[in-house]
Length: 372
Image (cartoon, rainbow, N blue to C red):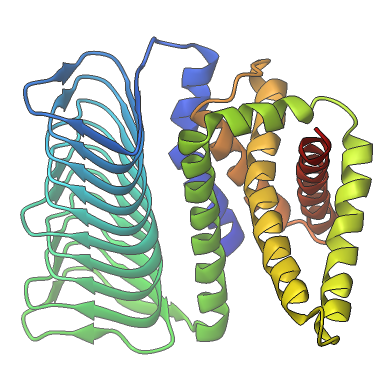
């Protein structure tokens, strides 16, 4: 059930961009380390932005898709707004659905559709209002705004302190708290390691029912998994934005000799730790062994990130016959990796193969550069 819930959130976040890829609509694209769109600007088409620090004060008349370390939205988006960010501050109205992959998310405005958030924390302030449902997977969630729909999801700590016209169906492994201003018109069904806490002024018109216990350790494991995939996706976008030429060269290399790349990468993956240990046990080679081990970890990490992009490009070609790397490519790669991680044995071996192929490509490129 938990695995299906993760997949549903990922599909909910990415589905609009499958449709967009199948029928392009001429989006406006901005990329760079720092992106700022001031309040005098109006974007008539879909807006795609990627950068370390992103501030959007201009109005978007269509959908907006934003990637950044720190993202601030100060003006309205007429249709869907999708964010992938370390921290996200939404102070502008959203005309349809809001979807966020992020570490820390704050919503302080009106959302006319659903709110779908996967991340570390979600705070919906009293200045906000949500016309649809709230779906959250993460660590901590606080809701003080009126919610016209239902609240679903999975978190460690949940606090509701506002009007909910629908019901609540939530897994809160550590605590579920209803504050003095909580007014829930529907039922409250929850799974938790503890009993619900209700303030004296909290009102629930429906039935309050605990439907199951939660293993806190298992829940923490699932939360760690989802945060890991968020970090991988964010890292893939950063590499895509800041090093596009490297990404393009890497993707071209994935077109041929995958078997050879994989064998070379697997050999490096297995042999390098042993070589590092052999060097470290000798006095003369200790520093060299440490340096080799650090380089190995860095190279494997980079291989994993590039491998995600390469996998995304492979899926993109299968679905859309499009070989160009763009915003959708890392998303496709991470979604596919998340799905593979749920497949016993075969999924793990496939992910190992992806890392090995990527590592083999990087090693061969480095060898050719050293010889030239």
